[in-house]
Length: 219
Image 1 (cartoon, rainbow, N blue to C red):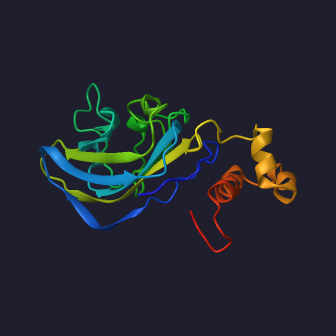
Image 2 (cartoon, rainbow, N blue to C red):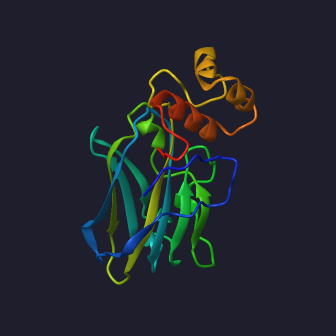
């Protein structure tokens, strides 16, 4: 699982990072199954989204939670989508390929298409991912998926944490309002480029210069 810069106005679901192999979700088991990833690099979270790729019949059986182990913060991403008064079994469609993002108006709970995947696209999660804002992105992140009804099964195929964050340098926010001192450290040839390059590429240049990396090094 890795990090991406994500534009909430891009309404196509991002490709999720695949697992080494499908992770089976036990049928009708509230404990579910857990997948864990350790993120490095640091920086405070300013926005966090999650990509899910799940192969499962009758997705209305599923509840999904994301936990940041270092802080104990937990957010419910899915809670048996489609369930409600008169619809106890929820969405009867198969499979999920979705990016969950607080800034998208359509709730994932109401998403249940006729095709496969039944939940396809960008949606607001059941809980608020803003609960992670301000926390350090580095650490152990755990995704738990539980099947709450008997008779259908499936597996987790992949998932991604999609984090926007402040710079690990501390005081430099990853936006286009850059401190003049940092531009000085970049030098004239890169200072002019700042206004045109994507913020991710420019922060890479900042880190290269401040950390003294050569042209052949990567960070």
